[in-house]
Length: 255
Image (tube, rainbow, N blue to C red; front, side):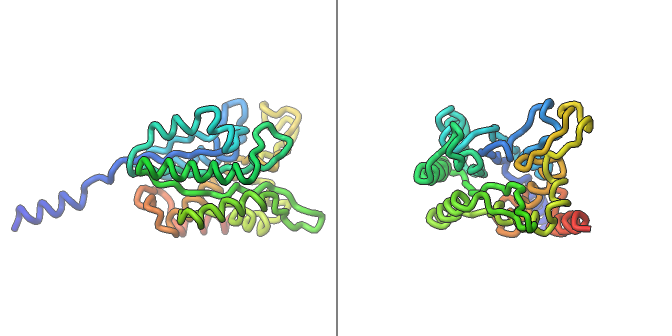
């Protein structure tokens, strides 16, 4: 009896399997250089919320689209390293959707690239999760937030449905938050600086695409809350956060 009980106790304290969580995407997710501070990608605080059995590898890069991420060999490096049980969080769109950028990717190719990430992740026994592009802060004269990702966010939603894949609709969720905060308060989530406020931006800075530290943490918490609510398999690896924590954080911001 004692031996059986000890066996059960030891089983209950077995460590979780160690996994890797790969982040692939653009500058809104990417790690930033010191000279860019306080600009912060939401992938930077993301790894702090996981226990030691989940290693977050943020491979997102500034200015990349699905196409250039593949062409530069960045996806191949992730694919080659993937192991069964790993996760791949996929968030592109900001650079794919702008026709004047070198990184522009036509809608059909954008969808094909997303399907490539999904199929090749699954072929290695990894779990892909699609994320719609996070919102830009763009209000009209009446204080209504503009939908700047309409076409490409729709492609992500459509692709997730067709591939029977989990979707984190960060576009919609972040737009809901920005609209609730309004034009004035939402500025605190983005890299807005007055002249001489920060030595990296001596003339000041107004950026409605990239985040402040607060904004990056807020977006990371939205993603984490979706992971918990949708039971995506990563929730057991999350530490120091719960739905109540996120709710309290959002409520303080709205005060």
